[in-house]
Length: 73
Image 1 (cartoon, rainbow, N blue to C red):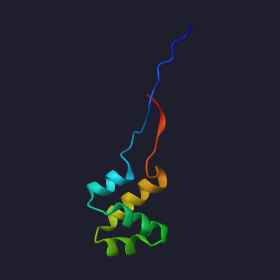
Image 2 (tube, rainbow, N blue to C red):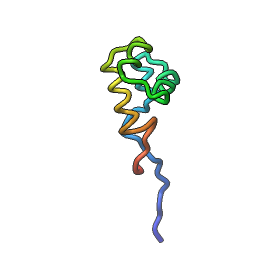
Image 3 (cartoon, helix red, strand yellow):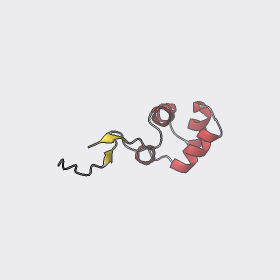
Image 4 (cartoon, one colour):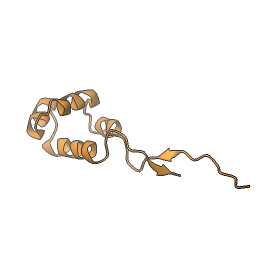
């Protein structure tokens, strides 16, 4: 008989919510801007953050999602 131990899924990336918090960006407001399809420049201006921060958060959202769970450990 094979004994399979339960394994929890894990995520190699910090969640988008956590990254937004680290950058002092309101997570829900950021998602609202994404859903309104605002440009990076508009988002930076309206959220009062750098263009690079917007690009970084958008890249996280587009490539990883709000929270990625891959594989098991």
